[in-house]
Structure formats: C-alpha cells, structure tokens
Length: 185
Image (cartoon, rainbow, N blue to C red):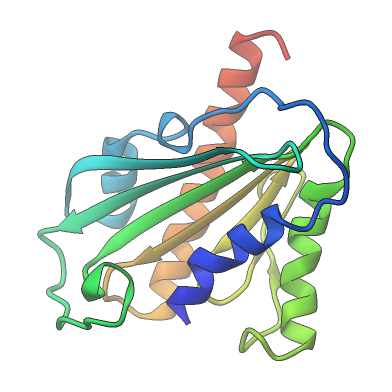
C-alpha cells in the first residue's frame, strides 16, 4: 500500500486539463525542518532529501522531501517496499495554477479511490488547512491552491502513525502560512 502513497501524488499532477503559467512554488523540504520532523516521529534524521519534479506540462509544481528516520523501532528489510522497508517520513507538495480547483480535486481523488477500492478505507476528515483527510497511509491537505501529502512509516501501529501524520500536517500548514505571509501572499 505504501507504493500508492508515492504514486497518487504523481497521478494527481497529471489530471489538470489546461496549461497555465507556473505558480510560486515552495520546496517541500523548506516547509518543515528535519528537527520538527524528528520531534514528531522520534528517532534521528540526518538529512532531508529533496526531489523536486519541478513544473509539469499542466503548470503545476511538484516537490517531495523524504526524511529517513534512524534510532527508532528496527524494521525488517523489505526489498520491494519504499526505501527497502526503512523508517521514513515523506512530504509531497503540489502547487497548482491559481484558481484551477485542482487542490480540491486532489482530495476528491482520495475519496474516489476509496469508492473504487483502490485504497482500503474511506478517508476520515482531519482538522488542517482549508480541508484535510487521513486516507489510511497518510494525510492529504488542501491550502489554497496547494496540496500536501504527508506519510510516516516508522514501525508503530497505524493509529500512532496517523497521529504523527496529522501533527506533521498541522506543522506544515503553520509553516506554509508563515512563509506565504513573509512573501506577501
């Protein structure tokens, strides 16, 4: 199921129908520090690994940050799992063209995926941003024309990881609001 975490954001990026000018685009790694991530998930994080896809054909901007977590619960190696089964937190941001409605559609795609049995649970509302939901393997948030997806895999039970994902999502929204306020948006 974790593979779906990484691919749904990529699918959502491809769904817009028209070409727009590239929006202002925060890097995912700039929205939360490794120390803030470590404080929520426990363990130690040596480095944040950015992977920005940049501006897509449809004018969205996609940015991903991965934090590998060490010093927590040891997980058995899983060669077919993301990062070989190692503990991690991941944030994907998609800055959609202004007024496109795609940030809202991003969340709708999770609800649609549940209806089509592509994910194994119905998303649950979460208090963060303009709208947010937990979909079983992460939290998806909409804030204006930006979508955030955050997932945690540190070897604890789903409820503990859900609490971590929700806490990270709220911190990311606060940091995003500060960053947006600093640039006058």
